[in-house]
Image (cartoon, rainbow, N blue to C red; front, side):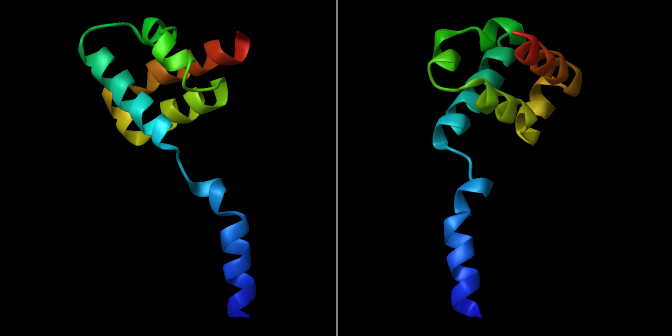
Length: 85
């Protein structure tokens, strides 16, 4: 039984992982927001667009550290803009 559970854990291990790229983009978003830039401007930066897909940006905006820094309302409006754009 142990071998089967190890097999499924290794096959589906990618589902619960975050990329280091997303970590760096999250740090960038928080830093730029602390500097006073709007979230829309930050997400339009080539740094963010070249490193993350829209789905990855949505995951970055769901992270607790990013939500705390930018606020729930800003993250929700930005995600709505991603879905419509």
